[in-house]
Image (tube, rainbow over all chains, first blue to last red; front, side, top):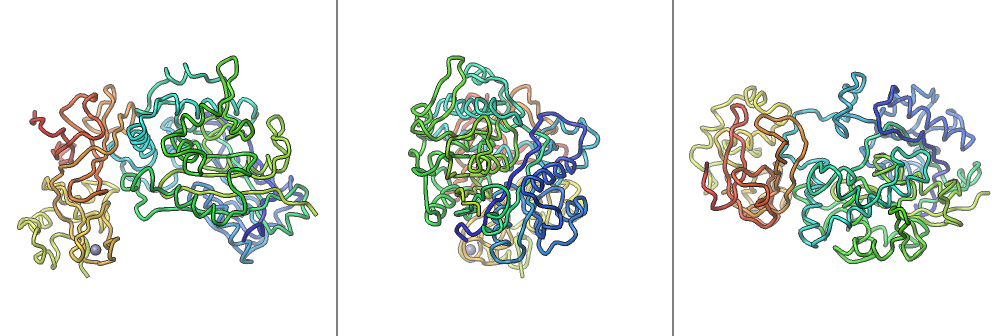
Length: 388
Length: 172
Ligand SMILES: [Zn+2]
């Protein structure tokens, strides 16, 4: 599949960290319309549809897409959607996929969603009563953060640098939800939510949506924007993948993803111009930096400190070897929790030259690592293709 | 086929099967069990939850190869045998991960004004076999990764809930 499938376009509504007066579907519609316009396509050109919520049948009906030959409703994070859509295109099940994701404030990501009566019925399903003693879901990352700190004697500042990097980058992204400067004093004095993690270690629940066009490299080359070729994509998991049964910090989903991605990809970390390393929780980014090979286990904090560009006002950002920035859009921590679409969209925009005030000059290759440790450690390598 | 139920036909073949387990199964109807654990019960987790009602922490163990697994599954992930039996563990183990919730879901008896400890404990029965719950009877400063724990029980509503206590700390 190497370089045979491309992302032809990516569009976003921008994100807001409040219960807005709009539905999830309305954001998805806005993002889908924007990406169709951007690529010069209409609903008639779409024959594949891929997203979580709303369901593909609901989105087809909403957008008046006349006929589909393929659709899927994968679970988050969004690497699942990319892999499914790319496979469908490559195998000929369909030709042009509209892939979408509505990030929406719901009870699972923010309790305050319940204050809005229109949101109470919007859920990822599941239900049931979750007792406080469970480490499934968000608490699982906090639990592993405790283990990470214990095994490697990591100071809180190492986690804080991830949050500050995302915030400083978000200040250059008009679509980001959180754009006020963040400095280490703010981080260290922030409200603890689930100790050892504080408010700034956890992604921001937002309203908004992203949408993408995924099609053959040939078709993408004839559209309006430079195609972004999917060089490789991997969804890695270990046998024990429940949050509390995952084997350890040297053996989780990221290790499977990284080994497979290195084997399948034509390039690796020395060749990339931008790294989008998932930061739904700050500890995840530290693990990705280590596991993709920038440094050894437990060393990400000092690696970041060695590759930190500090500003006089206390903000700052990671520039690996003075050249490669990380999470240039502001990541999940500051642009907003998009379950991977923000990282992917930013990679596409950087490679297409559309990243406006934060564009990396001549960016050609990106590594995108989406998701965490368990059933959600996903990665892809992307490169800029040539328009026809 | 006999799956994950200590009171099933094959239970007698297990040397470590306690004699009263079939009695425990008979005590509570399926309807009652599901109402006691809303949203949490299915055919594979029922034996574990029935065990809680008898203050027994039951973890699935394979009758073919002896491997334990959690959470409960209908087959043994090590050998794919369907002959898995919900089997008591001692509850003794070592804290592997430790979190303190400053906020969280509402639950009877849980007051987040003091951060609520949640630990994942590596059970002595098998490396990597873990169970998560809270720790009672010790201040948060003492609840640390690496500390030894033993099993205890608290009541949540009228349902016994397995919890941990730092080893050597007598019950209040
Ligand atoms: Zn077995």
